[in-house]
Amino acid sequence: MIRTVDVIKEYKGGVRALNQVTLEIEKSEFVFIVGPSGSGKSTFLKLLTREEAPTGGEVFVAGKNLENLPRWRVPYLRRNVGCVFQDFKLLPNKTVFENVAFALEVIGRPRTVVKRQVPQILELVGLGEKLDRFPDELSGGEQQRVSIARAFVNRPLILIADEPTGNLDPATSVGIMRLLDRINRTGTTVVMATHDHAIVDSMRRRVIELESGNIVRDQSRGIYGVGT
Amino acid sequence: MRATYFFSETYTNLKRNLLMTIAAVSTVTISLLLLGGVQILGMIVSNVTLNWEAKVEISTYLLDSATQNEIKALEEGVTQYPEVANVTYVSKARAFEEFKKIYRNQPEFYESLPEDALPASLRIDLVDANDAEEVAARIKGAPGVDEVRFGGEIIKRLLSVNSLLRTITLVMSVILMVAAAGLIANTIRLAIYARRDEISIMKLVGATNMFIRIPFMIEGLFAALVGALIAGTVVMAADAFLFGRIGDAFPFMKQVFNFSSGEIVGVLVVLLAVGSGVGLIGSALALRRFLEAA
Image (cartoon, rainbow over all chains, first blue to last red; front, side, top):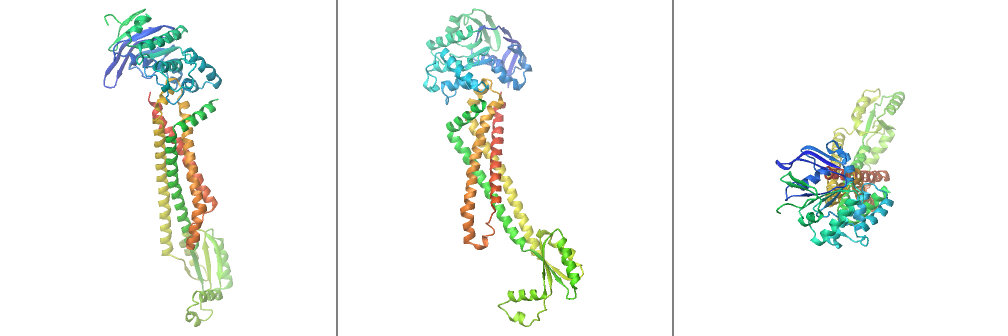
């Protein structure tokens, strides 16, 4: 589903965020990317949605080599890769329903599909009763559920989550992880960057550890880290 | 269903970003009002010019010895010139009558004159006053012609002032159009900047650039059209209530402020066309920067 070969990413000024990263993630895997701030986690995720292009090496997503992907095809790649962020990135002037519907409307899905799928997905994330609320009327955990609903409503092959629990308290985080686990069980590949030891240790999934842009550990059914 | 999305999206955005909408609409209105003002100034200049030019005529004085045939041949020949609008034969008797009329307060001027003292002449009205010198030169050598006179230097000077005024209003129109375009584009850019989060989310979930662009362009078009309509209404109101009154108050201005409905419609068409064109192009240009980043 995801394969990178000797990927190098250098930012302007010569900062090397990723150094010769080679890895493969299978379909329906659940993978944690861990490591300290600045280790290259976010950069790695941005390569998968073509928000950034690698300086060297190759990135394959859903069987496509992103290097050969023309600019106008990028939107179609992103329809296969849902994204969830630490800061939710919800539109404050749209209701819960509209925020999720937006993701379907802007890729041209018919109104009937929007009307059927949005309440369904919001039911799935446990917000079936709050369709007409605005984001600032919701708790952090609820906002993150909306954001997950938005990322998943289009049934993407891959779900990318960049520190989705970074702004949430531990109890709420557990709920979010349950949700991501459920999504993963539907066959969606989940790649999640995180700092959260407790979550990684309790989930016992594959852990890839980055340090200064290098993979220093790749362990199935791993924990956050030895000695940390 | 896509059309419904675009229009409901536009409507919601215009409503929720009311302040930006008002800013955009008033920018368009003010810019287009300036443009309309310059156009009307141009029309005033052109009316003044037409007034002057209408008064330019070539007087062709005929020799007393000129035969009826010569006069007839000359009159027919001149009438054929494409530059000539109208030719009037003024007999000696009529010339004397007109002279008397002009100097009716000083009868001593004409009392001592014999009735045939003044020469007969052809008065030639031109289509375009600029041709006066050339037409005069052509007539000069013809048989039966004594002397050809037209306003000469004064006319030339007036004409050059007119063409200068026309050039100035044209240049001002162009400058104002460019300025209006810049202002509108800038306002739309601000509106887009205020909603860059929305655009980044649209890109995130895989909206194509065209799909992102369309609601903004409809918004830009809408704001520009509303602005153009307001500016157009002001122009029409000025024509209906103001210009006529100026003409009534100052009779010598009547011609100058008298515009045909065709001219006013022309101004409105220009305002609508410039407004909508600039609204569309401005929003597309303003969006490009946001869409190209990643």
